[in-house]
Image (tube, rainbow, N blue to C red; front, top):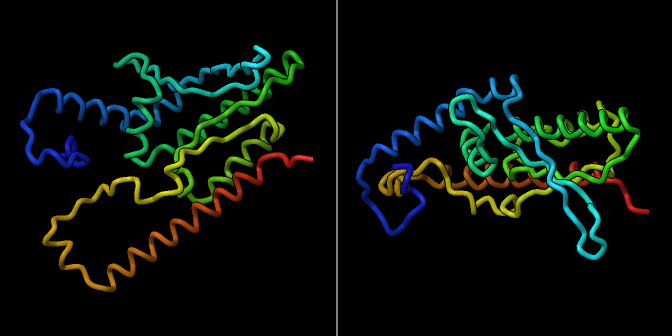
Length: 212
């Protein structure tokens, strides 16, 4: 059962109606995700970060809220894990980057004000997405946003692939039957994924302005 796959103190669980409700909720978000992007049900809120020593705003952090017609306003903490499990998180993060860059451009054109740097949270799974850094740089150039106004924060779990539980949990008897070649393919797969992640990290760091 998905509800206990990360627990080691329980091997049996009784069905409850809330499980079905949760399953329907997850299915609703995944099935309506593209519609939410197109209709802009997913909204951005900018949280100011204040420097304690001066009392002034030093930067902003972009936060997402999903305003769903059926379930109301959903915080990012509820939505993001579901999109990560469905491998849709990269599309959400690119959507956020696009809207942040668009808002920065519009603010500069309308008022001529250059705002403080904006932090954008990225999922560790974004690093496994093909050409993710190139897509980010293309969005930045599209809106002519200076690199100094963007900051990307990636969770530490991006450095440890084994920290994320495997979604395919084969029985122990099947695991014992694996051959040496299959183990080699798994090691090679993890090595390839790690190389891809390191490459994406280097490209994302290249987007940052160089310090003089």
